[in-house]
Amino acid sequence: MAHVKLHIPGPVEVSEKTFRAFCQPMIGHRGQGFKDLYAAMQPKLQALLYTKQLVFLSTSSAWGVMEGAIRNLVAKKVLNCMCGAFSDKWFDVSKRCGKDAEALQVPWGSPIRAAQIDAKLATGQFDALTVIHNETSTGVMSPLAEIAALKAKYADVMFIVDCVSSLTAVKVEFDALGIDVVLAGTQKAFALPPGLTVFACSPAALKKAESAKDRGYYFDLLEFQKNAEQSMTPSTPSIGHVYALASKLEDIFAEGLDARYARHARLSKITRDWAAKHGFTTFPDAGFESQTLTCVNNGAKPGGRVVDVPKLQKLVKDRGFLIDGGYGKIKGTTFRVSNMGDETEATMNALYAAMDEAMKQL
Ligand SMILES: *Cc1c(COP(=O)(O)O)cnc(C)c1O
Image (spheres, rainbow, N blue to C red):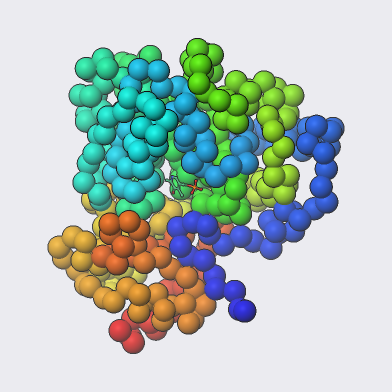
């Protein structure tokens, strides 16, 4: 069967080079070969996250670390900042972990703003909060620097930040932001196969985890720290993913971080331009659009054109590309196009050409 190229917002298209790296022969995860592999990656991971902390590798999908962070870091009550399907789900996950949790819900399409968080934290009830930097379901990027600045006022509150669909595409300076956990699953902006999460913790988070009695084993932050000090992971990782990450880090640093950020900004802009050209509006509030995917409004909000999304998807798929038909409660009333990973002007223009053709048939 011919491969349909992925332009859904995760998993995204994986390069031949990455696949070749993934398929190298197995090595033992307690042997020198693995330690050398991880140790050689560590400075690049630290540069990518702008951190002096050790960067951890969890071969789970992002939800593993998202749940793990709750189990390790919430003792009193967690504030789950919610603006779309993934961030809304985190509230549910907090409760399933048996934690006292409160929702800070904003309408889908809007970002989370610092003033809203400030008002909640001022009650003194919370010792942790969760935020999703780039809410993939709505295509909204919340202002992380503005939110992180609150940490200075609430030093004892753990700031847990999901950068699943932004890390590597948008600058996230972990140490300078002063946040406590940053995490990213790699099937989105990293363009690796699904099944690996990269994350880092502040010294304060590691300290706090010490007193968490029910933090379990698999996502115990202290196990990650202890093992990472020896360039190892707590349990047997998917070694193929680790090879693939090493290969991808070569690509990322060959391009250069700033060039990579600029490329994503340009490609998301031309996707929005494509939407405008066809009479669509975009779903996010103006000024808070994601730089890695575009959530096109298709009747979820007033204004702009409305088309038959499944039909559009089919016409585009017939031309070799998969776009997404909207997620959760905005399925069909939005659709999404990803520019994550290795996409360029040329590859995106091939997609827009197919989408232009498809639009003529609607
Ligand atoms: C995809 C995604 C997740 C969930 O990732 P899994 O790999 O399914 O665990 C979490 N947060 C965001 C922002 C995402 O885009």
